[in-house]
Image (cartoon, rainbow, N blue to C red):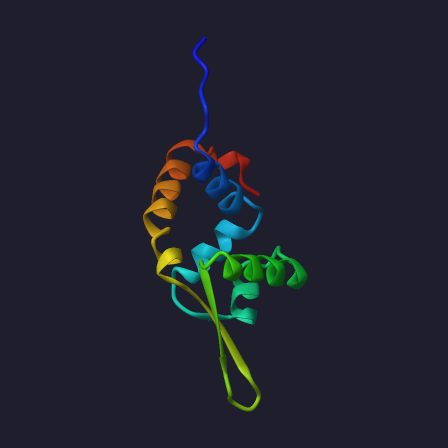
Length: 108
């Protein structure tokens, strides 16, 4: 059997995007900038703590931008950066794969 080495960049990308909730957060933000509460409302199963953790991680990786508006009260929005928006075709391909291969009876 031939040895196969995974590309470290591919491994890092799958590790980041494959974390629970990350793909759903990206999917929500592909619709445009969102406030924390809007993201939480769209992904009702995620806790606020976990959502905040994932958003910070995506921000540190340059995928999400956090913008603070100096309104009263302060308003914070999250948006995908160019790097994050470049995931759109990946997410679309995953949608197509899921529609073709994930059986409806496995959905809750």
